[in-house]
Length: 172
Image 1 (cartoon, rainbow, N blue to C red):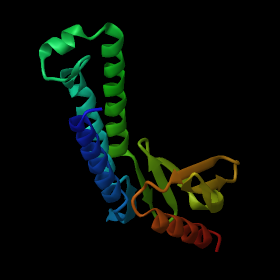
Image 2: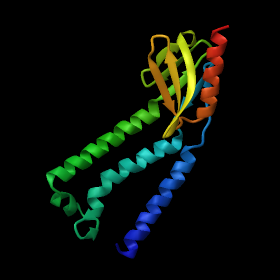
Image 3: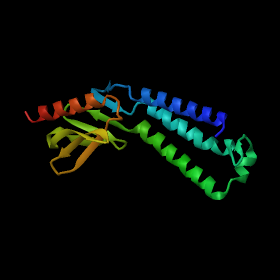
């Protein structure tokens, strides 16, 4: 690799590290009497960065190095363009998912996901913390259904504590 390519890679890695650091920050918000937990805005920026990168990739990558030309797009084979199109589509789905996924905690129930599926706390058997590569909170329902949320949600530990408190309060 040339010095320019190494510098470019280092800049991209540094930018991603900064985004990930800011992605880990965040808190819940309150709206209409419900605590709302969402993915951090930094994660949204990371998906947007990936989307822009995949859209612009054909203009920057050539077989001889870096260069900006519409001719680069014409010279790419169909498999490469299809692969880039699929990656762009996945990034768009990721952006939609991260922007619309939320967990709403009410006094007697919670609603989660994009479709806002509802679970009543009286139907929860247990809430426990799992560590299997990434931290997660696992909710086990009376019908043995399991639901988990990873620690990438803003205010994850507050979410876990709130769920345990709400489940304990529903049993009294």
